[in-house]
Image 1: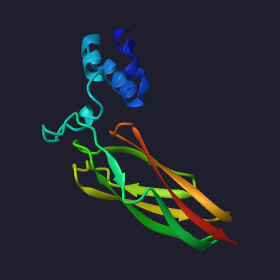
Image 2 (image 1 turned 60 degrees about the horizontal axis):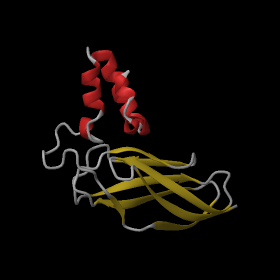
Image 3 (image 1 turned 180 degrees about the vertical axis):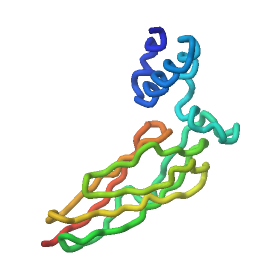
Image 4 (image 1 turned 180 degrees about the horizontal axis):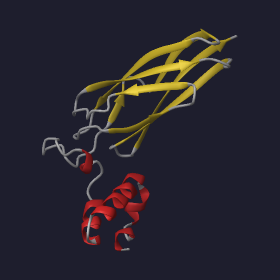
Length: 157
């Protein structure tokens, strides 16, 4: 199992998925090793311009934290937060997550360097009371691989 020799390979679950996929379809371990050692995101950016392939993106939010005010328990809050890809490579977001009371929507298409994009937030305040802090975690082809922001609000019964 030579393709497991690289410690870097074990750090990222998407590399593990690439290894499993290629080990089933490739006839030699050398091909698997070569594919698994590509730069992050290279396997996803096949149609990207050559000057952005293999380059990392950088997420820069309009604010480090967002204050969404107050709402009554049971109401649903809808907001949008904006960010810019400040890196030299196309931004490909793998996952954006938050607590179970928050639904998030974002572009599944690559975001070009310098381009702005949006994360749509829907927060359900059912069974909530008092000050709330919600962390939003973004996993993408950035360094480090995760980027974070948060929003604050207060729920009243």
